[in-house]
Figure: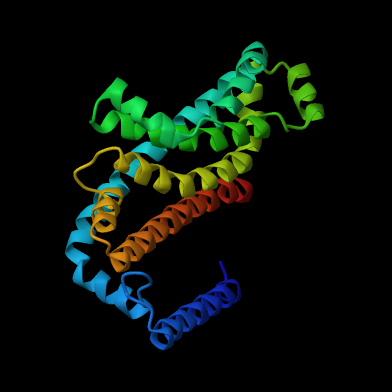
Length: 249
């Protein structure tokens, strides 16, 4: 990302923060209702040690869930691509699964799987697998049919066709879905921590909401945004090394 692309949104964000600070100072609005950016910063500094512990817990949970979700999404896409009958039978069910509110399904997962790590991972997987599966499946089906016919006539097996043509061509699409899943994964982790957790940003939010500490709630929101952007950036870097590296090779 070039400096010219970063500068406009950075300036816009700084102007919004400045306007927010001026408004809270001029209007005299109560800090418990709308804290000033300075008040939020002070709360972040005050809570830095506690926030560090909760942030690490959420990051660990997010990475575990994202990895499982990506693996599930890629596996589902490959199986549905290689077995058209399963695609016709299961693809509509995948779409239907995304219309079930996760926040409504989450309590059932606790009943079925208990209060441990398992239901939290499942929540993140349910949030992350769909964009990866759909994007990868779409990418696998976009290979040039003329090249595929040529490879088959040259004696290539179906597996060679998949590994040499279809899978490499699907990587850009897969990473498009992975970028979406990366941003969803943090929010999935927060939702899973609301179910019952001893630590994590989701747990921290519940405690601060009960204490009517809006400033600390804003700090937690900022942490969630930073985590999501960080994971998104890592995925973008991995895409650059993988996809562009293959093209350069």
